[in-house]
Length: 167
Image (cartoon, rainbow, N blue to C red; front, side):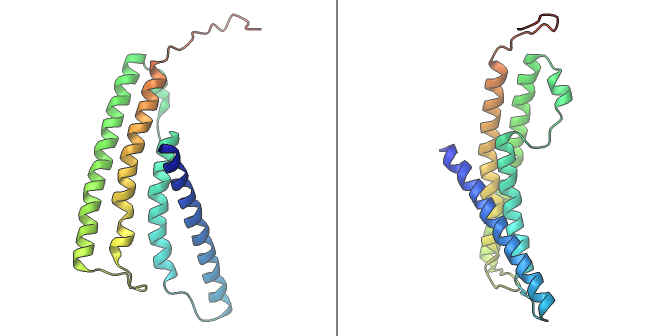
C-alpha cells in the first residue's frame, strides 16, 4: 500500500510542478509580448504551491530528509535514542493530527460559507483540502518513519575497531 502512495505523491508533485512551470512561463511570455496576462495564474500557482509543499513534506518525512539535528542523537546511548524516537514520533503525530483537525474545520467553514477564489470563481474548499489531506498523510508517514527508525535502532550494531585492518 505504501508503494502506491509513494508513487502517487511523487507523480502528483511532478505533474503539479511541471504544470506550474509551464503556466508561469506562458504567463511571462504572454505578458512580455502583449498587454494581456492570465489573471488566474497567480491564484492557481499559489494554491498549487500549497499542495506541493504539503506533499513534499510527506515525501521528505518518508525519506527521513526533514530538518533534523543528528549530532547529539548520534552520540546518545541506544536506549535514549529509542526513547527520543518515540517522543519525536508522538510529537509529530500530535502536530499533524491537530493540523488535520483544524484543516477539516477550515474546509468545512469554506464549504458552508460558499467562499470562492477571486479570479477563477472556484470553491475555496477545493484548494483548502491540501491541508487536511496532506496532514493526514503526514501522520501516516511519521508513524512509518518512526517504525523504520525503531527497527534500525533495534538491530545490534557491529563494533568496529579502527586499529584492526579488515582486509
